[in-house]
Length: 404
Ligand SMILES: Nc1ncnc2c1ncn2[C@@H]1O[C@H](COP(=O)(O)OP(=O)(O)OP(=O)(O)O)[C@@H](O)[C@H]1O
Ligand SMILES: [Mg+2]
Image 1 (tube, helix red, strand yellow):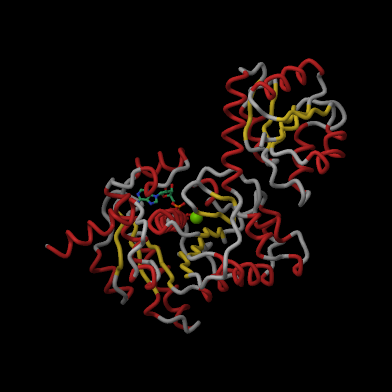
Image 2 (spheres, rainbow, N blue to C red):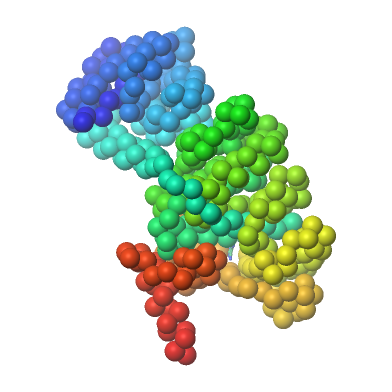
């Protein structure tokens, strides 16, 4: 069946060109000459994608985009912005109001067609099929001190689990102020926690939660932090409690990127955790923060055997020695991540974590093995019928290690 595309532009000539391109590309074309008209007919047309001009009188493309994102019936439709101006500022603003892609006029018909196909392919990935309830494993990643690699570890763990098992994995950004999970996976902030916080608690069901999550090609579904810090205040503990409970039933793995505090919602993320990863850097302040965290966890009666320490070399030289750190924190280090600034800078800029971008590099293998080590016993104990390339690599490595 041909995909339905609605083009919105106040200029007749542009509309003619766009619809000719659409028809030629095998799409069903619908046109609208104003934002207001498009908004009044969109529910009827039910487009699979919308092309929006920015410069329009009365209601501009940003406003139309924002309104579409607010309506539950239209918030999932991919939006391509089309404009005559090619400035970074406009692009950023377009993405902020929830556009998925951006093209400048005049456009090449072949490029427009290709981009539309790309967007439609990605949006098809957004639909998570109904599944029976599962008993998911919760892994929370935490540090009281910032900048030590919590988000890096959480993102690579989630992507690694998805690659190894091919099972649904949720990555939940609990750093409601300026959380970076979506950015680390190069996902446009189409929906965030704020969309869940803005509806009544009793309207939150697992379909809504899954629709709000953004699906990454690796198989990870991301529940992203809000675009604006002010929205963080809307995310109340009852909302978090309800959402986390639902995620556990729908995802084989739920990985949480926790903020550097012991707020009520952070404590919920800790409380839910089957395993808690404490990330630290080899410097005094981070070691102190880890000792403090372990004390607090002890007071909270979080089982010490479920805590795993990950030492991350976020800087290059003169760090504290592993054995000295272990002596002070009185807990063994499970894993040491080496300093790798070039890999990480390019991975953030590209929005592709090393475990996906370079799975056979030293860092990629380390994160793949880490993901395997944190897997559910039932997964580790069963040999998959269709093992993934990642699973085969991990198993080959562990065979080699046993031989040694
Ligand atoms: N092993 C490493 N080697 C080099 N750079 C690293 C390493 N691990 C993480 N980084 C870099 O350190 C920075 C902080 O990492 P990240 O954002 O994951 O930390 P965080 O604890 O989540 O910080 P925040 O306080 O911002 O939430 C990032 O730029 C990341 O790329
Ligand atoms: Mg972070």
